[in-house]
Image (cartoon, rainbow, N blue to C red):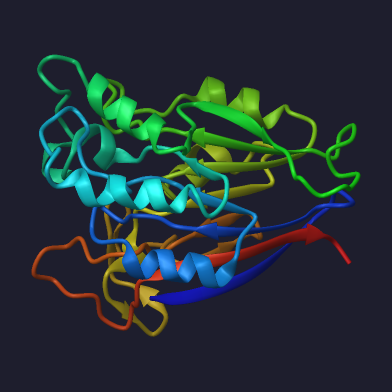
Length: 264
């Protein structure tokens, strides 16, 4: 499991936090991911979706490994998690359909996720509070972590833009977990959000001359597949191969180590 490091500067003084970004586990075995997180020793863990598979009850046996990962990881650091399309809809072939009973997540699975100790952000946000004595939580020097849930299973195929706009008006440093990087140019680029963290693209599956070949919802030679764009959009390549028999090529799985600190 590769660890890819980034240092991102904030305009707000006094901020100094290290995050481990884990995306797109798809309920695979998370042993290597846990080792990577432990080596990073983060203050917080951030997951922008697709850690589990469909949660309406149709994939409970498969999700056992993913839920085990959440239980272990949440004991390493405060863990903030927002849903992607797979948690709510299942595989890409199913995402055009709303579940027949309208139930995207069973009560049992919701109880398991909440019981794991993660902070589930469903079109909502929380204030991150450091246990270190510092001034970055005073006044406007606050860190807010929000989660914009995938819109793929809604009838209008749209994320909750009212929440995104409300989140952008907060006074402080704002981190938004948003599974879909293609939402950035369409809906988020003009909003006052400091850092948007995404996954979904799996690095483009094959990477040739530093570019991904294909990503869902972006098509061939997608723009947003890996790394930092505009110093605001950070895209993880994910932590597993979820393309069946199609292997990754020049595209190792990764956990991101992200140091967010005040500008020098």
